[in-house]
Amino acid sequence: MTDLQPATAPRSTSTIQTVSFLGLGAMGFPMAGHLVGNFDRVLVWNRNFDKAKLHEKEFGSSAADFETAVSADVIFSCVPTSLETAELIDRAKPYLKKGSVWVDCTSGVPEAAKMAAQNLQTLGCQFVDAPVSGQTIGAINGTLTVMAGGEKSALDYAYPAIDCFAGRIEHVGKSGGGFAVKAVNNTLFAVNSWALGEGLSVLKAHGVSPSAALACINHSSGQSFASTVTFPDRIVNRSFPKTFTLDLMAKDCGIASDLQQQAKLPAPVMAMVASFMRAASNQVEAGSADFSEFIKFLEQWNQQEISDDFDAQ
Ligand code: NDP
Image 1: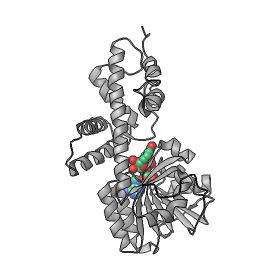
Image 2: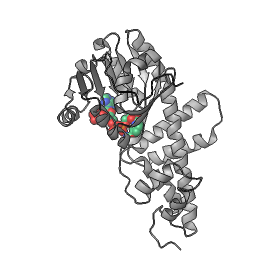
Image 3: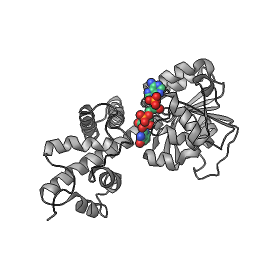
Image 4: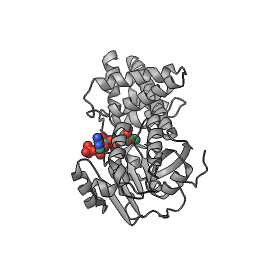
């Protein structure tokens, strides 16, 4: 469903005066920065409040207490899971402004989006599940893909604010639709990544360096985001920059697995890779490893690294 104006439309502030952002993590911090200058007031709040003060200093937003932040016209949240979003909404209830729209950019659970939407409706507010894709670099550049679920009227209202950090905004359906698309998208990325890890292991065992193999694959039909970006930039060079943690990836694959179970549909490849990601995540402390470090789990099986640590034959 693409009945909205394209994300390339001129940015306008419409009737929104105050926007707030809750959760200034790896994604939220740069996303909130793009709001500044587009609205009368841009309020930021974070559990560790020092980050809100840092944001104010860096971007010119206003660090605000929780009660003030959640009384904005459009409230963004970007926290690890739907559990934290539900906690925030519960805490915010006495302070919400009638007619406001809560836009949750967390990669969350579709059922939780439906509950949040019902919950907020009783207070005269609306909820949009609006998870994002594009990694931290997309958040910094303001080019994120936003997959939105919920009432069109809510999305229309919040659109000028979402547009500040988006390269593309797609209304995918009712409440929970955005979260569902995000979970499946990340699972497809995990499937590609896992399969590429297997393929490069086989090739390395036969004397082909991963970089040489990627140079061919990236100009052939086997190429993917994993082969063009993730493996060269994070894995083969062993840099593993921590921008999206492995436990969050395992969480997203788990959400897709639950959706598959609820629909009673066989999806063995997605389910298996979700289990691999969970197993890899269980090997490390939560929040301590980048998602690309799943490869170390596969490398343990194969007793070889996906790196160019030998002379290719
Ligand atoms: P981070 O771990 O970097 O940030 C998490 C944020 O949530 C922090 O601001 C943290 O506050 C806050 N938070 C955690 N628990 C609570 C709580 N109980 N109450 C209030 N605030 C809380 O995560 P990311 O920014 O990487 O990810 C956020 C969401 O975006 C996740 O759902 C993730 O799956 C998704 N995502 C991430 C991408 C990435 O590349 N990183 C890409 C696309 C989506 P504090 O500073 O106090 O700890």
